Image 1: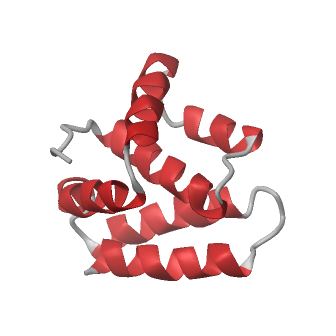
Image 2 (image 1 turned 90 degrees about the vertical axis):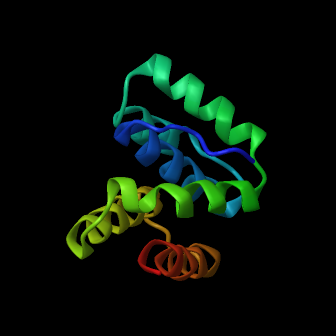
Length: 110
């Protein structure tokens, strides 16, 4: 997949959609959380991009853009905090979600 020229809020929304989909179903409260990070017209655009991507495409887009939006360790930790907050919205933290967090951490901090 070609690289996408994200704005920062779009990149965060894309990362959060990828996270929300870690258990294969994006829930309504997760969509609302993502929408709170950007304008509604941007949500539709980013959601459409996400829907066109395979998991590998998503990982490539995140890997290719992480240094643009999170250069420091602190900025990367802030992104991981957002991811964790999203996954804990339903007061459950499944084994799949824990594995996802560990894998995403490797992608973000590599």
